[in-house]
Every structure is written in structure tokens, then in C-alpha cells.
Length: 241
Image (cartoon, rainbow, N blue to C red):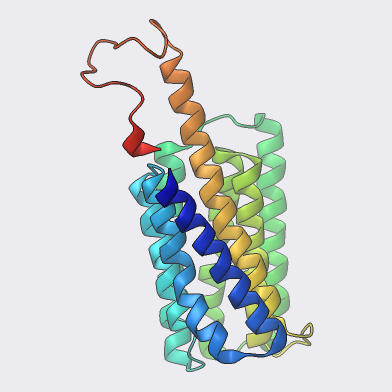
């Protein structure tokens, strides 16, 4: 258990260094700390036995983080593409490992309408102020991001759903900067604060659902300590904690 805890502590330290650097305007600290965040979180998740799709999604987030350290437009587009692939991985993860019917169908419909309204309103408002060559890519990416946030809430529950919503907020803050809208003081601080929290909550939400499902399986016929048909291993393996 020490190695996962060490990795999680290192992730927390990197997050503190990154956010503090942004708050005080120390750019070298942000340049060093930002690329460390997602690999540390992915390594922690992997040692906790996370599904591979979660690890891959986090690593594509790392790719986007690294590319967005540059202000050049090609790097921005490549970074957005890397995050988009990460969102596709999240959607595949929710389908493969999420739970159906986490909320009543009527409530799920209302959630879908709410996210659709948020997507439409954001794109309509930003569209005139975005550079012409970025309008379609930003709109397409926003639709994919919204689908990811919706899937996180409806398939993994509230914790991951909050992560998805924060991811939407973080990327919306980026889009308002691209559109040259008025910004909060230290806008990069708020972008990274919401982004780091988003990825962490998505990770914890995924691991929580996995642990719940594993517990339900272990509590099945025969109890957690008894081997069941088709299983040749002990159900509790220290290497997967």
C-alpha cells in the first residue's frame, strides 16, 4: 500500500506546486509541475487496479497538458485533439465499467436536457468571438466533452459526475480566453484548479464503482472467502490494492 500512497502524495504535491506557481506568477514552477500531474495520477490509479481505459484517458490528458504549455495555435489544436481522445476513452470506460440506471429514467432525461442546454448556450455565445478556424473544432470538442460529463454522472454517479462538470467548467474557461472575453485574475490558476479536481474526481469515481462492484461479487454465493466456479485465484489479491 505504501507505493500507491506515495504516488498520491506526489500527485498532491505536484498539484500544490503547480497551483501556487500560477497564483504567484512563477511560470517555471508551472512548466515543471504541470506535466507531472497526470502521469502520477495514472500510476496511482494503475496500482489501485484501475481499468486500462482510465489510465489511457489520463495519459491522453497528460499529452494535452504538455501541448498546451505552448501558446502556438497548432499546439492548441493538437492538445485539444489529445483531450478529445481522452474523452472517447472515458466514454468507452463508462460503457464497459459503469452502472446502468444509476438515476431514474425521468431524472436522466432532465440531466440530458440540462447538459444539452449548457452545450448549446456556451457554443452560441462563444461562436462570434472565436477565431474562424477554431469555431468548428471547439464546437465539436465541446459536444464530446459534454457527452463525457453526462456519461460520468449517469453511469458512475455523483463523484465522477462532479468531475465531469468541473472538466466542462475548466475547458469553458479556456474557451473564453480564446474568445478574448474578460477573465478572472490569474485565469490559468482557475483553469488548472478545476481541471486537476476534475481528473481526480473522475479517477476516484471510477475506482469507487469498481470497488463497489467487486465487493458485490465477493459477497455473492459462498461469501468473499470462498472460491466460486470459474475462479482459480483468491478473490483478494494484495497486488491489486
